[in-house]
Length: 486
Ligand code: NAI
Image (tube, rainbow, N blue to C red):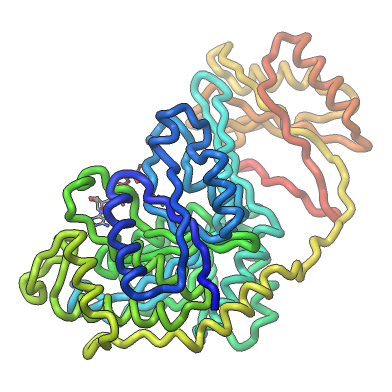
């Protein structure tokens, strides 16, 4: 059989060291792979490349459809956007699959026997990165949850559970607070769950769910959750399993897939030959399974398990009881290579051949668009007008009186809220007000012209409109949240 060609990007920080280690292990294991090497990330930004991914890199990824990627540094609180998120979103990698298990007693963990898989939605939520400063005091980030996006990731999670013989899926969301966005995620989860009677569905609110993952992870099997929660909870899970340095991650799409470690570029230890390459190696094992190279995946995983058992450890997982030799990154790779063909004695050996067949089915199944969004009749029932207003001691009463006059015959001013809490009519004197006001106007037989006229009246009154959100009803049900206290 011909070799598969993959694209390899070493990334930043410890990326090049751990990528070298993993490529060495893949080559020594005789993996049927040809590799195209690309450079993405910091170096490209520093040369002026705007997305951090040059055109020839995209060409390679589109050609091979499989990217093995080292971690990439993303500046915090400013600077360029995340290359990881750009790659995931541009290539439509909708499911981020993160298996986390413990390797006790060889890697210290309070939870021997922990074995769960987090399927994180990978393209939406606040990771749309759509942010705006709207007033001196207020910035906003748009959280987008879509029905098709949710369907794809939830269906993938159920198919994954079925393929891997897992019996239970927890959906984690915050739909008690975000009733529309997280509410949609939970609703779609319930709909799809009904198609999989062999898998037990449960829902937990994300806060208690995260606490349970930290304190009682053995109760979980598969978790499916929106992007941000999934990001946080997979680090929690990886950390309590023993080390964030161990977990691998698969980013699955229809047109391409990307494999990486869960951890980041660890600039604090870069260039010292002390990083643990296991996270990326476990990512590479997921890649081999994706490519149908289950035998090689099994050989490498068993060699790695033997390395753990033999006490050949990097510094991050070092323990008095079980570490026999403290190894650098290169030496650890050599220790894995030396154990190719061996089977672990205490840790459960890998047995992947069976799964690879099912994996194909998973990929086929999630390309089917199974649930059509129901096209509910939509009617315009109002508009939320957002104002930057910092006058008259920020008195909601004064603003309310001004706006009542602007409403005209078409609209009534239903409410003014500040940071989501109703402050007019009948607000509480204790509520703290910023310079950012949501003013809700509702009416009958509305159209865009009436809204534009309303906005014109605001402009003529010297009020600064920073944005509007139309209020719609879908099949007679409000498609907008009420104000706190409304
Ligand atoms: P990090 O995961 O890079 O490091 C956290 C801690 O874990 C550090 O003390 C580090 O030394 C240690 N660590 C991480 N990987 C290790 C390994 N393989 N072996 C031994 N120790 C390891 O997280 P941090 O510091 O928050 O992020 C650093 C950079 O990485 C940031 O720019 C961030 O945006 C980026 N990042 C990239 C990711 C990706 O490419 N997928 C994922 C997460 C973060």
